[in-house]
Amino acid sequence: MNDLLAGLRAAFGLIIHLDHNLVEISLRSLQVTISAVVIASIIGLPFGAWLAVTRFRYRRLTIAVLNALMGLPPVVVGLIVYVLLSRSGPFGVLDLLFTPTAMIIAQVIIITPIIASIGHQSMRELWYVYHDLMISFKTTKWQRMMVLLMDGRRSLLTAVLTGFGRGIGEIGAIMIVGGNIDHLTRVLTTAIALEVGKGDFPLALGLGIILISLAIIVNLAIHLLSRTEREGTW
Image (cartoon, rainbow, N blue to C red):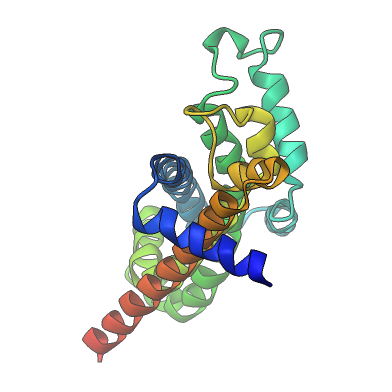
């Protein structure tokens, strides 16, 4: 118990004094995950809206596959990205392996199905409400998608938040394609695993506290934004 309390005191000391390694790793984690979430949202949200307003032969199969991709094993994603970006792979000439870019690519592959699937479920419900009105106004498919994206923005925040939470806590794919290189690709999750292995529990606890705090802050921010919008609507 005493060791735990001492470790927590040391961890909070590192946070309060803005330890250089702690700040560097935290900022890199945010950079990688936020970049991946932005890219995944740009891809996933319009795709979810398109699925909501479009009817085609293999639509149900497409939705089923999309939902299944939400459970993609991160290690498998990391392995695939590693093979594609390795020197013998088709994109090896780009020399992206063991860089933050490779980590972002892996996270985008993991996050996009989550954002697209949750976003589609929300916009599908809206489409049931707006369907007759949109048809009567003879709107184009693009206009219908834009209306769903705008009117469903509160629920879409949940999809984006879920994607962020999935990305910030990722370790398997990140470790494979990033390599956990100090001052280059080391992020919160990989650093925690490394520091625990080294026995540096204060730094590991400090990183863990930041990781949990980020999740709480993002959830509170989304809650406040949603509440503000509801008050503005009413």
